[in-house]
Image (cartoon, rainbow, N blue to C red; front, top):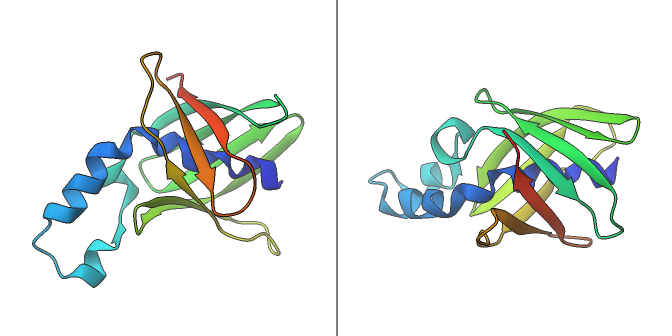
Length: 126
């Protein structure tokens, strides 16, 4: 299920979000954790793992995500924390994964680099 951590990528179009958080008049402690509906693009993304495996990650406005890879599905909550997109799986024993999102290329793809593990390639599909 670690590979499902791709959902974080989805917020790839968050470059503008970082600016919004920096310009906030709110105290720093409150600006560190911004609700997803205010900071990222809601939608479905195609995620390609380092080994070429493809799956999808869907982020919803209410802060939920669903990752689908092979026959596996992972669900949980996602949020923006300290400039990273983080995914907190519902399954017990799974750890929260955070990604730094790269700049989008001309074709709309971007790289999401996790705190631990290999970077993944992401592209919004809807």
